[in-house]
Image (cartoon, rainbow, N blue to C red; front, side, top):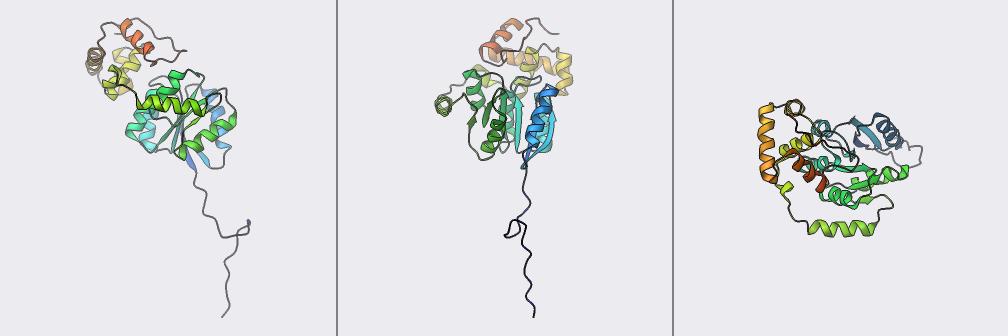
Length: 244
């Protein structure tokens, strides 16, 4: 009886299973920047773009639909910024890793990103290889900070995370946080209602509740609170005018 041998693959061994790709959701509100990042990501054979958008709230909806392995998100964008997006993704989809892209090396932003569950923080001026490394490290369950941020900084920030004390902002619900971010961006209650698929009256209720919890009275108070708590990255310019 003839003996049949399994054909070897070109690499001279047993057949290899198909390479499982890491599915990535890309979130950045600058189309040209997003296109460049997409090209970098797609140059890696084990990465695939599952979807892309330019808004933090839309990103949450896409994570619900696509269940990506990794979200690569800009720090500064409309809807929700990358810091709050990371926190809400961690709550809703703890298996999804978040890599923050930022032009800010401010320690407060890095610390908040880690506190909110981000696995990596990559500066936009870092080398192209750093983004790939960040995604690989995030998938492996490890933290990654691009140079000049250091491992010592990671350890120091993790220690600070352990000693993190709840603030008034921590008392807000996810919906109240979403309303707060949109109010700070200058949207009216009607505009916020359209973004959140709810009525202006409901938005006003959320806004009244968050103002009470934060012990604030005016729009100017809210803007100062957002700035003091690093809810508004430095290149944003919130308006102190009261939206209607």
